[in-house]
Length: 297
Ligand code: PMP
Image 1 (spheres, rainbow, N blue to C red):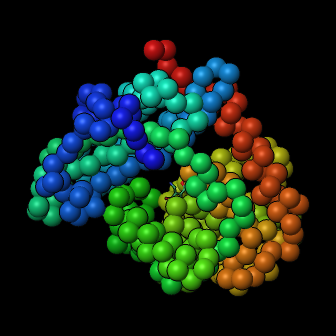
Image 2 (cartoon, rainbow, N blue to C red):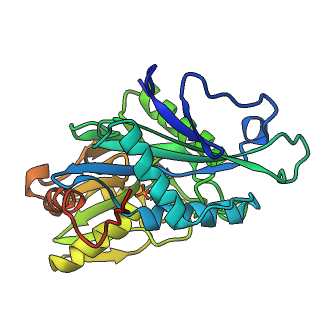
């Protein structure tokens, strides 16, 4: 699904066939989860593939690497140019780009002096699908921000996400919603969370969540469209009485939620602010605008 015999990846300065690219078994990331990554989308437009907000994604990658003391000697510009080359080499338009910075061999609990960079891409449908998802409050909390850099996109954080999604699916739901250590709603395993009540959108403040680039885009779209978003702490029982709710993320885009813990929302999705924002989000990502930076090949 992620690659076939023709797929090309970028690994440590060279373009290689995915089926022939290899890495060592003693990499620190494999053993201890000390690596950082991004999830980026490109969209087909009449002008060719446009990567959505590459600057924001690659700035976050550099921040994540720095937070984890992982050396990474690429600039945002170089990473963006390489990403467009990756799309071209794989003849991709609508694609999901996965940059992964992983650590070299080191079994000590210190960063390895060398890191590896992998860039790969594949076609990926909306992460949570098209239908409205049934969500369950997870028994797993998001990682304590005093135990890690919660705003960095760190490989090891995703063990928490995998536990939460697995638990939700085993209980018959589609996805999980995780709380912070104080019992307030934080985010989904791979997406931020918003709900609507009486014409206003609510989402939790930064502090216990990944600062989503899609979340930020929703703030920008809401401002343009005169919708109010309030950042505040809230609990699952506040959400039970909501008019609507949705997840936001690069892979999920704007994903409608049907219910939380079996409590359905008051409005049909098509009548919510989230629905309108989902439409505007699709327009934005496919529009040639200053959000995009397409370097000349
Ligand atoms: N929270 C978590 C835990 C995530 O993994 C993601 C996906 N990167 C998000 C939120 C949404 O972030 P973005 O909109 O930047 O993709």
